[in-house]
Length: 592
Image (cartoon, rainbow, N blue to C red; front, top):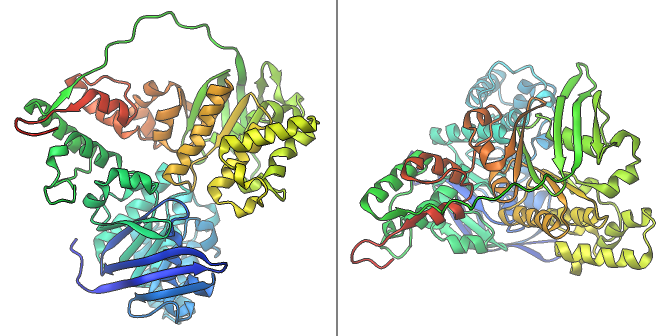
């Protein structure tokens, strides 16, 4: 699709400060044309959501502050117009669809906006039908939005924005809280929307893999200022600068930048002439390079034979575990699950939403009572242990840290559990300091927890858990709403707990790259049952079974499988491991 010459969005030298003189955007310039898809990247706190608020009028009409510079959205300045006026030109889809859905049926949800502006009934029905077709929800008009899956809710929210017939669509991290199938559903709907070519779309995200085939322009923000801006190929070729800004380079782009350095354009930008967007295409390009001698395959020597170590003792075990949530109708969240966790393991748990992941880990800490079966900690039935006894042994960090934070300061938050355990004061002080140091919050010790960023509140919840010195640390969806840097900081905390304290770690996540880097064993849940369980590399090799749960192996694993006939060994899970095997060679006369 070609981009129209008509300018729809124009920002010139825009600086914005929230109340309290907090600078969120600095000297920002942006031009977007009709039909253009602009992707905005950056770490948490970089200013992405503030940009969305400025374009949609949420700033200043809901969140106050001071702005300098010029903002033009479809010929109006949202700062000067009431929200109902801006809403007719610019629609907004937020991270959490729950905050945008409030009507009893999908059809009334879609009709709500245009009916408030007196749009004729027949036109509302025409718009609703078109929007439902685009998001693939035709036939579900009478369903209650509360009964939908996460992906269906977000697609309903998107359709409700589309019925307003605006010229601009702002998507603020629309897939950040969804599982793999939900993300796929929403991204597919956005792709169809882009193909129509009628809307100018601004999308913020941390998931760079999703936007490779969508973006016409990429804007990278860092502390409110522009770090990088331009076409995707040019921006994603700046790997070191992206890392500095806390942005992940798409894996396929990174592979091509590393393996084909001589193919970069000689125009001073460092951008590659072509960027393949599929694993098959990149693998074909590697095969050609190997045939030409510009890439050499150097598999590592086989590991020396050694006797297997004695198995560690069991620390957690589920026997015939069945958990049912009350209805109507009752929902069987886990069905006859048998699983053993040994001391010192680092285990990843994956599966789509509703597969039973959170139910399993909550059962491990006694928050849920099984309908059948039992959970054992070191051979003792968890149902017979007190909450305090379980908390000292098994620590759980929930998806939303705000459910676990309630004291006036970070220091008191970490000390709270220790005081309940009757730990001596001197030891409490030492444990608090050590836990805060471990998560990098020493300087914020006396700060009110809700003054911290969301990522730092997660770290504080981890600190409060680790201070109890549990034997097992469970992290439930630690990557939700986290930026690239933040998700690895949390995983590194779990790794330190595992290595320095010989602790056992269970990490529930949808992030397969995180699993590949940290987890030694992988459990895949599907429809309340264990679908796969084994060493991580072996589980990722079961592509067909993984497809049932919409789990896709890491890009490195997929490429290794495609290139196996060339001698690339199985079991590769990270790009670093792949680059140890595939080594670029200079052509005659070139400097490598």
